[in-house]
Length: 307
Image 1 (cartoon, rainbow, N blue to C red):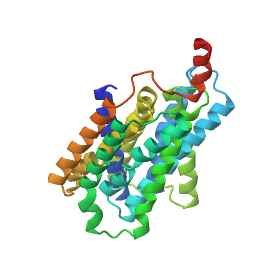
Image 2 (cartoon, rainbow, N blue to C red):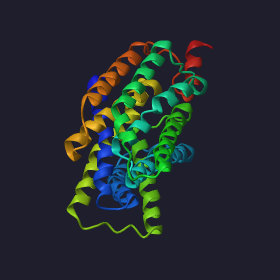
Image 3 (cartoon, rainbow, N blue to C red):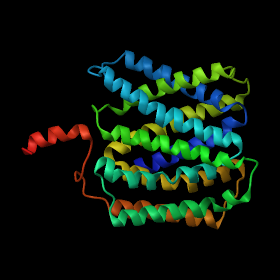
Image 4 (cartoon, helix red, strand yellow):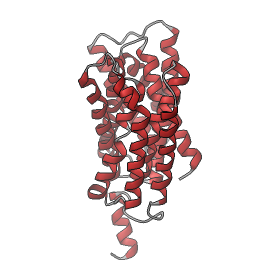
């Protein structure tokens, strides 16, 4: 997997936690999310209408991408933003999301046939250790957030895992650009409906709100989210999810630089463990082309091999 592509994914995805905190200071979560997705959805739909990239996309494939978008964007982001609005810190939210590789690794075998090797499990455990080290102080320091708020981002993590496996489970392949367009349009509809129902659709006049929206549109939406699906198609479930181990320490670093949040030896150790985890998992991965890819690819492969 391209190192620069992976690094860009880690930076842009982790920027979403910081953007959520920026937006939480000026508006309700659903307001921020509504205006985060309306502009990119409008741009992407206009682009789609002017190109032939949608040719051959069936109603079934479109509906499937709507469900994936509802899980991976709407469900995942709503829980992240809501948790931060309740008082859970960005680092602790990233910590909870950091358990995603273990969940994905445990399910990749029985659901996709992409079994995790012993070396990869070692790397996953090392990555989880690094995530815990980075955010242990924050998680135990005590905040104004109610105890149940820490379960909210866990639900979002499960939604993202479900979307990832639904994408890899089967169905016709869809290009990342088409998928991103459907997902953003779905989220724009979902969050606009929620904001209107809650009376929170009107954006505040503060410049800080629009700065946060611009941040969220450019970095985590077009950058992080787009790269997630691109790397998933190139490297598989275990590899892309292993990069999630770097989100907690990187988010903590962002938080220290932008909000003055604590940053010390624990962050350095956690980041080192996360980097080591990524290296170990990639070293223990099967050769390219080995194992099961998409379920929709299997008939073509059997036809070529005669099996």
